[in-house]
Image (cartoon, rainbow, N blue to C red; front, side, top):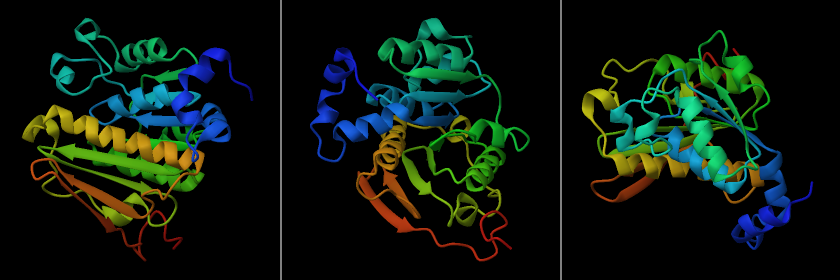
Length: 246
């Protein structure tokens, strides 16, 4: 796989990194990342993945751009209001990097179509705020052997974890929490979405190029108000209905 002169200049800061270099950039170019939800997490993640030169981005979202999205979903602007998110996002990402192939899928991921939407991906990023969707994405990733980077946020705090086989996301969240909160209900500071989305993109890049230690089996919890972060281990649930094999 070769690079054009434009790509060599575009990715120059990657090419001089020992952990990326030419081979790593080739792996990025050959990779497909699925972004489930083009919202607070998915929007900034998509921008950084496109800028990084990930060859194919599959955008999965059935929603349309709303004015209230613009506070944090920076892949959109005011002219996009009312457009399907995947359509508006594809235009922005292509303008940012025409070398990236965008696969827009204007559908809601469900248990019925999750396997098809995950198929062919090297990494999946889930930034949705619906637990049924999160559970379906997780099950499909475990079945396909695809690493899952999961990001979540609300108010002033967020978290990012990577699940590659076992433990899986259902080991962390075995059932829908009875007091589950959404950003629409409790609010979220916009810049926090950039922090969590960028962390999710960084984990995807690390997984693709094989750099460093990904957050596999770990959860990074960021407190924006206190400006602190901590990482905790996620234990495998011996009775997990998804990854225990029972």
